[in-house]
View 1: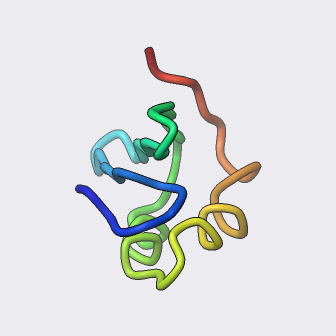
View 2: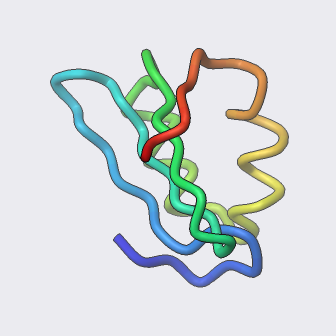
Length: 67
């Protein structure tokens, strides 16, 4: 889902896998593992996606860069 953000272009979530996919405006894509659904919902609802990402996601969940 495309979002309005200076830092983040797109957020996707796979509930069965609890995987959060984030595409940054730079075009880099990352998958964050074991992210609870409520964290994803709060991310989507946050006024500042970049601030929410820095405070609640970055460094808290295992991740990998996507091709």
